[in-house]
Image (cartoon, rainbow, N blue to C red; front, side, top):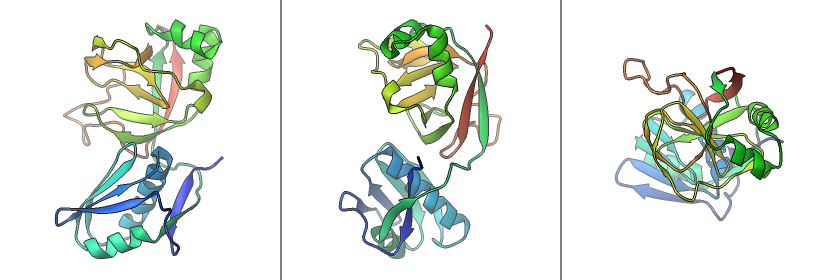
Length: 220
């Protein structure tokens, strides 16, 4: 199944809104993450082709997409208001492999929620290809989509005061990797030594919107 993509030329769905933010920014509100991802991909392609004029930054979130530093605000707003969804191809961003030791504190609980063994839970998590839908919460933290909807799990009822850097975790429809030690309420299923955030690297964040991700099981 492919996610919806966008093209110009017909009325956008009524659920979409396009708002002007200050003099040089636009905020698009969309029904959900799939629509945000599709719009982000479409705009990124057209920005690279020079079809949007100057747009300094595209910032996706769960249900919004911010276009910042827009030189031709009225023209881009008009284009957004006449976009409609169509079928899209497979994700084509750069691929990052995340070697993971699956020994997280919540792995047994997640496996029980899925009705499978811990070994089967690892296979379930390593099988899909993931895509970074958006970033947030902390520098370098990506919200990854790709796990089938039937495997969504709730956040912990009581967040932990400190989650170690490199923790691979689940919450709702998303997988994430904690780039720094921080409080967190996601279900911890594993850990990776891969540095997600390195201030001496350019760019510092390993994961950016559109990046493809694969998790591979490693021995501890």
